[in-house]
Length: 473
Image (cartoon, rainbow, N blue to C red; front, top):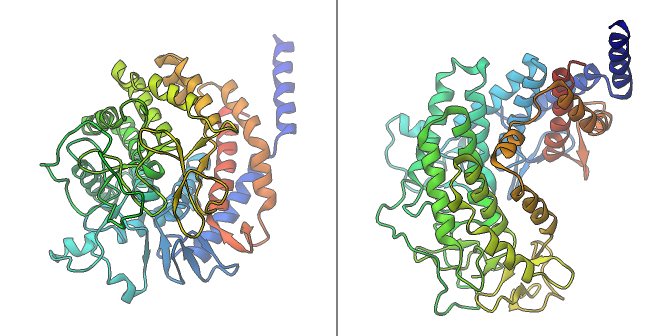
């Protein structure tokens, strides 16, 4: 028995010798968050990047000393990764910063329930928004103030996910305002779900209850020139819009077991069943109008089926099957995978867009944005060919696994041995994150403070520290 104990102890010591000291990694995490919370945060929230001095924040379309971003990697993902640091370490320094990020979101929550892309705390600039606090104060007329909740690019969804995790953090159990804000946002999101089960890219109130429920079909004709129509009200898969909503609802249902969330997910599943295009293209479009025809969005997003967002639709359907066991969610998948196989480009990749019915890959001419079949001169700001094959292969592997195994995978590591394996896998990234932090506590990229770098490195270090703790090492 003694020899077994000695062997176990020596193995433990060998593991510790090969891996970075969790205390050193935690110290780097504290240094990074202290700098961010002290120098970058505006009312507790964060922009997407800053100049090297941390004085001017930048978001997608603006710069300001008082601006924060709701779009990742801004306030929402910064707040979430700081919360994860608290959960990994138990250090209140992280909890304080996470609470402040949540308070920033409460301050800029729109009366429509969600969030805009960004918010500027400059008193004059803040007047352009119609906020939940205005509604609470009895201000019932938004006028021309901004009140459109945006789901585009994981904005409101990431805010909801962060606030949901905060609400369920035991240290926040007495925060009634946090709970009220989060409930208000979820109630608005559920109310905005259209009768067909989808969401638009933006909403300012409940969905139209008279909107029809139809099966997707090909339009008789469609314009090959950009019509410059307003597209924010279309049912939108573009940039994983619906997939991100599903992610939040799955997490909400997992934490709260509220049947409203499962009902909304099932309704979304029904939409994906209806939205699958008929043969010869049994996949999905980026966006649909009320008649369930694929339609234009921006000048480089034509009516078409898509090689990118279709995979996201299949992933949501598959996860619905895992949760519910209902085989109807699996039925669209094999026809779609067959389409992927026969729609590969010569190099084995897939186009972002395929022409309706002919299935010819579609592209745009650089600068002029003329629709073309030729990919030799295309704009570089957008991905017109998508490297999704590896993701498709990974998805196919999931299809070979049973529900019970997949549910266990979703739960993550459970035993000390599994956590030890995760610690080994996370060690090099955590070490690199700590070593790349500068003397002030910043990660500099392209001569600016990049919040995406902060999120990436903090996640790596939190993963490692958590795994070491739960492995018992």
